[in-house]
Image (cartoon, rainbow, N blue to C red; front, side, top):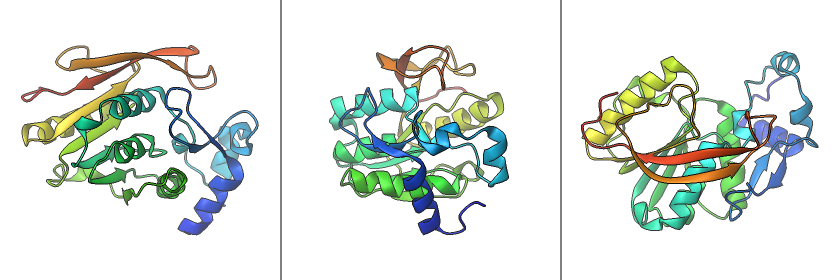
Length: 225
């Protein structure tokens, strides 16, 4: 069954993944799944049987890789600032922000396994990253967040609509909002400013092609979700 404690979840992740460097962000090491790790071979039914939600935290998604790459190449965007990595998963983007010199980084995700994954991954990279486990969309964006980072948030329509509206409110209140996206179905086609575009190596097990054209976008003030 699903481990009931944070320590148990850390042990589960350590036993079912291996440390790897995402191909587009080789400066960062993460606990990830691949074809030789136990969790990679688990079916959806097997995951449900042990009470494990889909392990999004076990993969370095294309949008997160692009956003992390951009932060490492443009550290002035976050240096000395308080940063929120929204829907953090593995914590890749938040870790990149910390390595780029952010004054404070908090990763947020509602999956309890993400807290364990973020802790393990931050430790592997020698950075300090906080964690928020409740649903931030239930309230206004936190006033402390000077920069909000979001990768791969537009794979479901209801979630994309809700998140983009929440991010627009944060932007109008003064936060910088950056989004990494590889052309997900519900990503908006207008209104955002493209900052960079990359060709991110991925796998057919996760995506529809081995190289995903992935962009980093800035949300302008007054954006209408």
